Length: 255
Ligand SMILES: [Zn+2]
Ligand SMILES: [Zn+2]
Image (cartoon, rainbow, N blue to C red; front, side, top):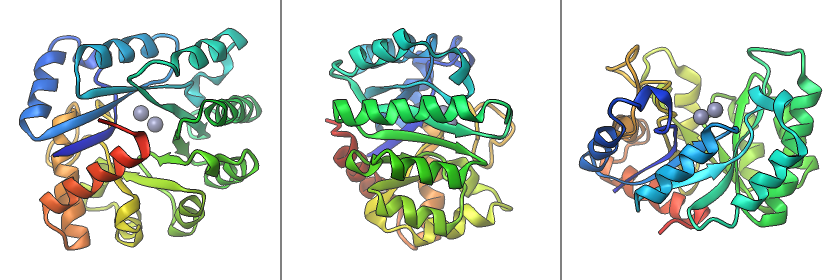
């Protein structure tokens, strides 16, 4: 029983073999998949996937990289979709200062609006954070995100920042990088995160774990992430699979 709390199986990369890839995940023991929709194109296809498969859930949100294109109607649209029985979180939302620092303020505004929406509808948030640790924590605090909690997805920050997020009722999710030899920081942070706040994910088709690094990632490989998390924490694969699934069920109210 494994749960991938962050994947993009609706991505173009799976157009040739999406159903087979989801079947492979099931065969590897994945019993719950949270697929992330994050803009005008990916939200409808993510929800469609959740409607097609009992064990697939969807999120709805606006990615920081698309912040410039979000209109008021988009936010209303996202709000209306929160009623959907398979929509379990607002995300991925956050800040990404890696690719383009030129529109930080727009990103921050779009991020704030969506945290307010999450509080309004009572759904947790899924946070995308790239090179923006301080601002993320500050905004989560100012917008009272602790009220709904959520997931720091594919966490890459320090333990100090992780502690602040844990204090705000967030879970910390790790992906493929914890299987890389050179990924010292996420491994160290993972070892310190309380087990009842730990989650695992793939972020497929990106961030492919070892030994498939360089190839397309897919949800079936969340098993490799669970194995790595087990090795790092001194637990068996089965224990990590069970604990992270229980955590996901509790936070996202999955079936
Ligand atoms: Zn992300
Ligand atoms: Zn993602």
